Image (cartoon, rainbow, N blue to C red; front, top):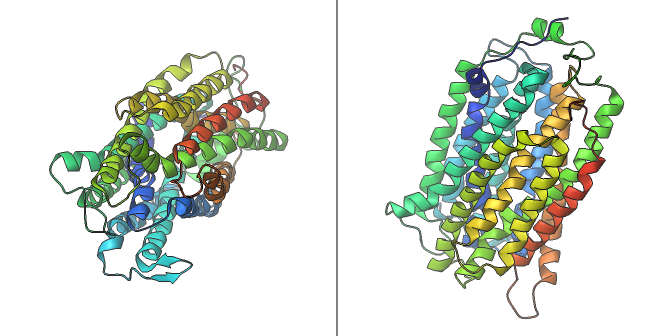
Length: 450
């Protein structure tokens, strides 16, 4: 049975380069959705409910893409057609979403307590996240398809780097456009131009990056894939050998990694949802979305998220130096948890850089280590795409649970007649990461070197 050849660094780079553009779109969404809906008139206690759709669509779409792409082959490849379709839809929605407040839709409540502009924004968000998920999943699958066991860690590290680099760019766009003189405030219920232009430029970069990967990557044919694996892929003996991909391994890895994932992704759901309000209150002393201070804080969210991305890139380079994946996972989550909790005492916008830099260590681990540990457990299985699609539920389900619970939990931190203490949701996020770290020892690493 043949084994997959080593790929050059640039081949591994090309394999994931489109992820840079996809992550710009994802960063724009994660940094600006709460800001957009607050500007459109959403109550802070309702903000988490707007975040239910993205993970829900991911949980539905990614397994479907995995199953379909496992069975697909055409002149353009196996995974790449889905990547391209997702990118095209994402570009269209990225042009529409930030204009939700500028299309003349009704500002009166029309359904479920939502105005026409909020409903349009909600539908746009649903289609945006669906398309991002369609475009994102093929990158993870292509690494599983085309990279051998020895290079798997490097391949996911490159993907993690490109992911964080894309995040850095996407997060900074509104701040950069404001610095260049683009208006950062607008009429009540209208999204500022700085945000609108950020989505436009992000859409252009997304499609260019996806075209690059589509042109540069030639996927293995079905015949080649059959030669590489039947029940398992043969790995080098000794250090680095991977155990057989038995169903028991798959179930064990899915459940144990999923437990850790639950606490990690619930934590980051609260970061994306409540950071704008928490920063505005902590450092600008306002909770009014129509104020210039709130919109300035909204730009600063992009800056601190960019600092998080920088911290993630730096930490990702250090992760391979640990003796085991599990040890690096534990340390990363604990440091990230400390970062979240420290925000409670921060009232200076620049000191926030330290907190979010620490949070970046957890993000680096979450991007690379769960997929490395899981693909080691399913290595050589011909249904790699299906399993990775299902594994995405360990990312989406905790976000849905966290979003549903977010409003009631925030109410516990809201004094009667007072303002909601959104910073406490970030403290809770830190506690979740530490609990996740305590659960890491449950995971069995099927790479014998670790």
